[in-house]
Image 1: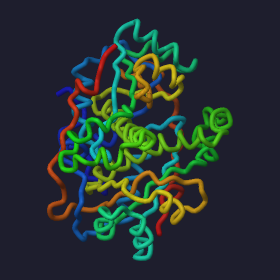
Image 2 (image 1 turned 90 degrees about the vertical axis):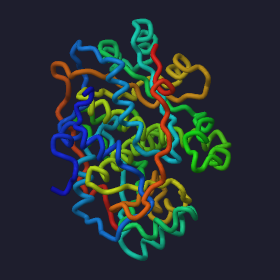
Image 3 (image 1 turned 120 degrees about the vertical axis):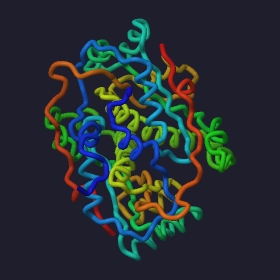
Image 4 (image 1 turned 120 degrees about the horizontal axis):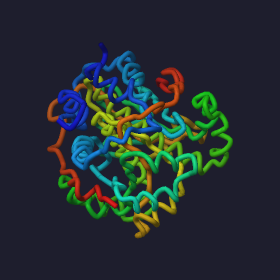
Amino acid sequence: MTLALDAAAQDLLFREARTANTFTDEPVSDEQVQAIYDLVKFAPTAFNQQPLRVVLVRTPEGRERLVQHMADGNKAKTSSAPLVAILAADNEFHEELPAQLPSFPQAAELFFTERPVREASAHFNGALQAGYFFLGIRAAGLAAGPMTGYNAEGINKEFFGDGDHSVLAVVNIGKPGEDAWYPRSPRLAYDEVVTTV
Amino acid sequence: MTLALDAAAQDLLFREARTANTFTDEPVSDEQVQAIYDLVKFAPTAFNQQPLRVVLVRTPEGRERLVQHMADGNKAKTSSAPLVAILAADNEFHEELPAQLPSFPQAAELFFTERPVREASAHFNGALQAGYFFLGIRAAGLAAGPMTGYNAEGINKEFFGDGDHSVLAVVNIGKPGEDAWYPRSPRLAYDEVVTTV
């Protein structure tokens, strides 16, 4: 009873949720994606920056353009999942920062004038947001199948082309199908991860 | 009713939870931290890698060693929070990968022999795990105050010293105190983040 989060929510988000490799044909609606976004958008980032961008791949043409850049082992499931989303970081997020952080509008020009600094920040905070998004998919009662096996440069050029976006992950979304997952792999024990000074 | 996650859990983790800047004196126990870890350790990463490392700063000496590296605006709250944790990525996570991924034990030597590749992977997946950890703090009924304003090199040398760890965030943990948070800053609208192809 150490946690305040109820057991059903623990199971839905963490304990019973699994990365899915197969899906049923049941479609995933824009309303579901919006409900996911409108939940996870509140999770914390540094300076309230919001570099995450999401491309929903809904057309057969879009699917083909994506699959060609996926690693061989990911092509079949990326082709067949009900919905595939490309998660990317906008490395020019600082342009929106004064509006996102009205209490400290000068943060953009104080900290983010240099592109390498911006990129590192966009990648870190975009990764935080990607993780929140994966949990949001589970919160919607769906299974997520995140993938990082792809030609990143190929995806960046194919779907963004402005040189300002970095793909972070591609995620299959839907209801889990037959034999959707492998046996759970082990996790590090608390004492292997947490130390005290 | 588009989400499967119950409303109380939505509020606890996302909608009502806020980044805290002040805390009460109520201590945070090791049992609470273990409950947080034992929940969020199940959230997904690439290849089931687990680069996240957590240093709990419990002694006055440890607190002083940390505070000297924090940005001026973060020193007071880092000094006074009931518990402070340093979250870092272990860039040599690949040594554990064969045990973490028994279904594909050759992943480490196929993909992670080069240090820059390992670092990028450790930073991305460590960031995912850091985000999960922030939500885990909220799942324990506590408030998180994540910070990225510090001298990263200083913290890496002070607390790790092996050249193999990269601090990702420092997080204050406890029950929220008086005037614990600023007004909620805006979030990007769905249409500003999500596009369809």
